[in-house]
Length: 391
Image (cartoon, rainbow, N blue to C red; front, side, top):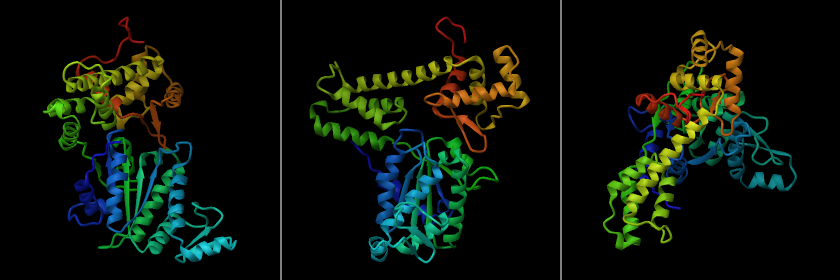
């Protein structure tokens, strides 16, 4: 699989996380937002994590979407426990081999030797302090899709515990615990930082730079090296195609592979075929969202419409919202009916609506906001059926 490394970006972020940017705030937590499938997780694991490790830090990575059936708080505790287990040293390993029930690490954390990867009888701040003291190095906790922590009370408690750990372990001029929180939806990630009750209130959300012309230049160089008969490759057309794919490298590279295949049957330049594939992907994405919307019941459509229009201002049951639902459906809609519609939207597969532990709602896929805004700008909202009648 092709990976485009971004070492310069990784080095700059590590510098910021270490508190070496005079006006930066990343030492208090690096919050990165990037749309789904744009290379965020690959960058974290293949670029940022290795750079942190090269600079002598212990990195613990967890993806909260890796198992959505499990509580986010339990996932975070487990990866910290596993990291501690690898650092226990010969004394702890000998204790386990001798059948001793538990050992104490760094004087603060007791680990049950029969439960590798689990933390017992201690807090997350204790566990992170123990990991730091045993490793004798700064610790970086990297949480991918961090917004998922907000979907459970235990997940929210975990975020509060991590904030406490950061405050306990870090001192002016000395950063012993670095937190990296990434998310595919900036609006959801903002809920970690933008209210008084948020665990990381006051921190900044950074948009992770999308892959750009350097990525395209690397792809062009690879194609020209392997297929010299295609020189010169039209980089402008490939850039345009990449934008049509929403800067999503996986879909772009798949289309490129198909266009370059000797079995593709492509006539003419392959760049045009890739560009056409990008247009088709864009149409398919839009048609899927339109189909999802038109397949809803009238009250569900009205609730989703309100959510798309209001974004973070969305309040599902206030008087204005209920009037809006009535106007769109032509009949009175109660708060209970609106709640039932929201639950139905959450239970769809894939879900159309996300809910936090505090009862906040948002569209599950942020791309739906862009689709909605484009249709509004083109005066084509709401979508209609083939017969021209909105359901």
